[in-house]
Image (cartoon, rainbow, N blue to C red; front, side, top):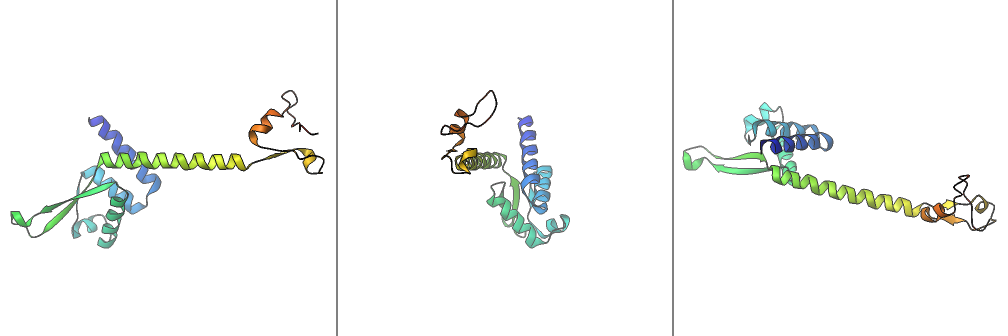
Length: 156
């Protein structure tokens, strides 16, 4: 079980460094090292971030489904206030990363298909109006002379 946690931590750290800004990377590194982060004014000072920037970055990471928080009521135990403890939910973060990779693959496949379908091969006789030699990629593969490698139009 510990091995899978190490792999999850390294994946989350790599994704953070690849796609997020410095503030988010710092927070993720702290959460990976310390496992939780108490949301208070001292934490912003320790991380050398403005409190507003710290909350904004934590909110962003929550919207990205990387971190979650747990509210702990210190008032019931004689404390002075309720506190939020932020942590990385490995299960949710890994599923979020998988979903993003899936969406990225789909977009790349759609872009490749669009690029392939919009490209045409023109016969040399097409430019001088001798023929109407426009071919898609699949059609062009059938009219290539494999011995010479030349593109042979059916009409020319």
